[in-house]
Amino acid sequence: PPLFSVFSAVPSSPPPKVRAATGLSVANRRCLALLAKRCTALQTLRLEDPGIMDDGVLLNFVKHCPDLQELDLFACNKVTCEGLRQALSRLKLSTLCLENLGDDLDDEFLEQWPSDSANRIVSLNLARCTKISDEGLACLTKEFPALACVNFDGILWLTSEGVCAFLQSKGTQLTQLSLDGAGLDDSVLHAIATNCSDLSSLSVSFCDDFSSLGLPRLSELRQLDRLRLKKGADFSGDAFLQLFSPHTLGNLTHLDLSECSQLTNAGVMQIAAGCPRLAVVNLSWCWEVGNEGVAAVVANCRSVKTRRRLWTCWTVWCHPVTASRITTNHVLPHSHTHILSHTQTPPP
Image (cartoon, rainbow, N blue to C red; front, side, top):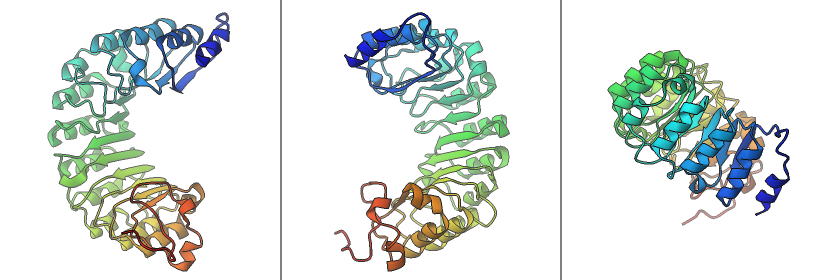
């Protein structure tokens, strides 16, 4: 394979100062073994094909790359809990992604996490590790003192009580938080606003069980740079007006309100006026958003046009002034998600 030839040509002494290997599409274990052997200064590792990673490959990297600090094991289902535990006991990781790792990763695994490793972990992605429950959260609260960035998306067995206890314990230490909103209630939104004032990124999927009463509390998170609230069907138009009231969330650069079906033009216009730094906006399936809302985003959020990052539902129509500045070239491809010029025929 070409990569094998490349790594073979790399001198083994002195070792090259390669700090990161990310997005590698490696066809076989031979290439990975040579990569680990040649690039002993690696600090970051993420593979494009998780199917090639197993205990043997992982422990080979551990053996040759003791300075690894960031490890992404997304969907590496061949890695067992025992292999992972051995790796954790020998590495000094600060960032670890275990997203969609498999059914074996549960509360018991978190409880048996090597203590030296747990003390160093700052960023932990447990998304879609579906066997984790409130007991696992309690373990993270007690045994992981440095945690600042956590991803619990797709974990369905967490309760509002368990999540609130975790948020109250970590408080302003948290800077990034991702949750699955299914089964949670407004008390979680209140706990976020009350305890986590230093959040720079908040993502909540499946917000169906939250109400308009809790949503405005998030306006207190003045440090937010990224906000994602997906599928908030019960969030009213008035609640969005309160959330984005003037001088609240002006630091936002990324906003995703997809499937918040009660969001209206008035809400989007207020967002555009109060969040001029926005560069990425997702309003997919926000059926009440029309010309006026889109025009306001284009007029006030200059980075959206420059970076070509605006999603809206296909029902949006552009008046002549807006159409001259928004074309299909300005819209990121997305199923059922296009901005059409005023001269086009609507889709069936």
